Amino acid sequence: MKIKEIETSQLKLKCLDLITKTFVELGQVKDDKTLAILAQTLSTDLLEDFANLTFEDIQASFRQGVRNSKEFHLTVKTYYKWIKAHRAIIWNNEGKEHTDKRLRYRNTQGKLEHISKKLNFK
Image (cartoon, rainbow, N blue to C red; front, side, top):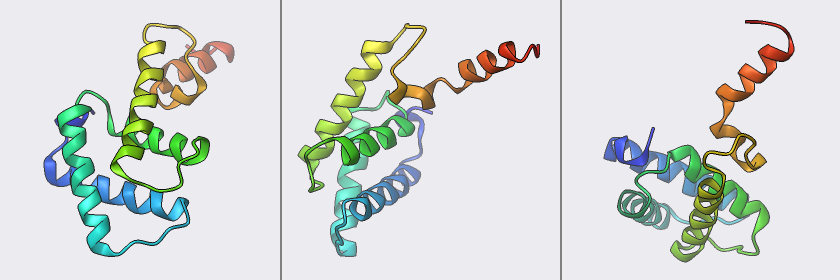
């Protein structure tokens, strides 16, 4: 489901969960007010600038960002870099049969079909 199709209150909760998880993964602790403000900002940014991505795309961008970037502080500038980098991967792989492994979560139906063909299930 695209970001623009998610109810605003649900999007804010998803963002709060993602922000909280990301701080934990980065080994940081923030107060509830900071978490709430950053989650509100993320939800607004997603609706305004990334509405056609899915929330799974956003989660994947944060996952890759935490694990593969030199950024160790979560800020608006940091998550924009992560989301834009992941969006570029998505765009660069659109229409390709074999996509980047970082996009596996987007192609589960194709994988299942591939596995069933291999096992001669129809």
